[in-house]
Amino acid sequence: MKVTLKSALIISELQAIDKVIEAYYGITGLHSYFIQSKNDITDSAKERNFFCKCLKTSASALKQCDECTVENYTMALESKKVQTYSCHAGLVKWSVPVRINEVTGVIISEGVISKRQVEESEDWINYLAEKYNVSKTILMKNFSNVREMTEEQVDQAIALLESLVAY
Image (cartoon, rainbow, N blue to C red; front, side):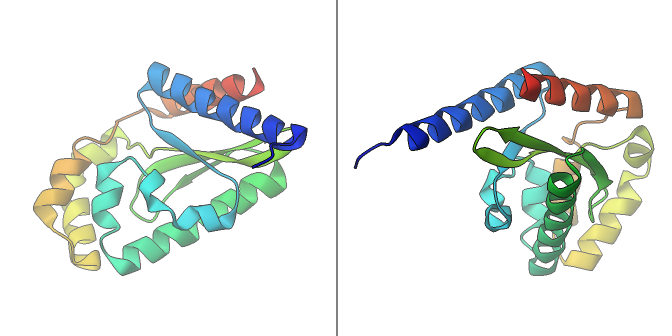
């Protein structure tokens, strides 16, 4: 296989994005993943949050997740601005647009929850378990592992990710 200069640059740019994601995780403890096209969105193996993985065992939850991700991926790319949103499962997530020469896409951060969501977690998990017909016990166990952040911490995490991308 012949590697052209252009393909070598694209590989280098993708490696740089991987390093951004690794550095972001090292600093914040939040997993994230890079999506280059809407086709990448259905690759839920990129999702590292076990709460989300458990919820996605439901076909309807997976469909809603993919629709939410497509919408926010598209808005981030078109507006060239960060999109902060609450997903269908109630997690706060953000999509950061990335353009490095020939490589364009969005880095999506792992979802977080607020203190209020922690306080109301039992009611919320009951609702999700019933709506999507998934195990309440497994959801609750994995919900307790979702990172709790204040709005200020979310803003700081977004600013950090943008700075790492710009660097």
